[in-house]
Image (cartoon, rainbow, N blue to C red; front, side, top):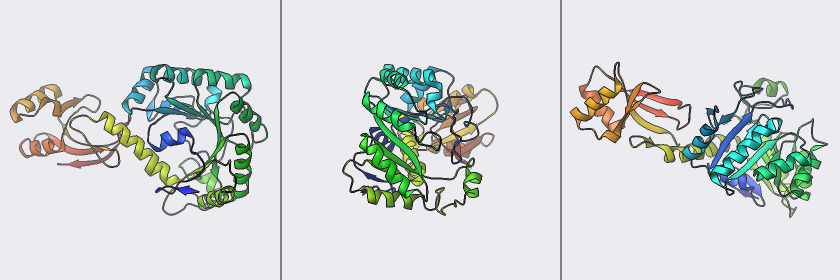
Length: 352
C-alpha cells in the first residue's frame, strides 16, 4: 500500500480520472441535483440538492458556451460528470460529453458518477458519446442489481469502478466490494465520510462524530486503511482512499491554482493556495474616465489597471493601489484576495 503526503492511500494502479483530479486538471460538471437514492449522508448543498440545474465548477450553467469557457479558463484536461445522478438526465449528459469531446478531442478524459443500474443500451450510448470511465455508487437500493451493470459496462470497453464512502464500521463491506469489483476488472474508490451543512444532523443522529482537525467522521479513515491492509494480498485489487483533508486542501487547491495561473490578469498575483491578490479602487461616477485620468496623471501602464464592470470598481496591482492611496483621499482603496472562480468569492478585504 502506498501513501501520499496528504494521507491518501492506494493499492494497484490509480484510475486515470483520479490522476487528473490530483493534478487539478478535471473540470467539475454537475449535470443535475436530481437523485432517487435519498442517502442520508449526501453532502450536497441546499442550492443543488434535488434541483434540476447544471453547474460547471462554481458557475451556474446557462449555455454550452459557459461550459467550454470554464474548461478553457482552467486549461482542463478532462471532466468529472456528477450530480445528483447524471443518468437521470441521460440525454443532457450525453450532450455534454459530446460537446466536450468535439471541442477538446478524444484525449480529453471524461468520467461519470451514477447510482443507476444502467442497461446495455444506455451504457452503449455513453460509450459512443465518448465516456471513458464510469463510477457506480453502491447504495442500499441498488446493491443487488448494480453488479450486472458493472459487468456490462466493462464488457463494452468502459473503464469501470465503484466509489463509496468509508463507514467507521464498514471494513468487511469494503473488502467484499473491493474483491468483487476486482474480479470484474474494476477499481474501488473510498472517500472519507465527512460532515456537511446538509448531512450533519443525520450523521449525528446515527452516532457519528466529527474528528477535531477536519470535517471527517471519526473512524472512517481507520476502517478504510484496515480494509486496504487486508486487500494488499489480492493481486488484482485496485483501491484508492481519498481523505477529507485532501479533497478540501489538496484537490481543490490544485484546481484553484491551475485556474489562477491560467486566468490571472497582469495586475493579479497568484498565491500558493491558488487565490488572486490585487488592489482595488472604489469610486462614484465614470470608472473608465477615472482610469484614464489615473493612467495619465500617475504614469500607470494601461495594462496594469482595468475597470471591473461586474463589481463596479477599478482593479490594479497591490503596489499601485498603495501608492495611489497616499494621494487620493477621496477614493476608497483596498487589497483584495479572491477565488479565481466564476463566483469570485472574496476571502480577505483589507482597507488602505
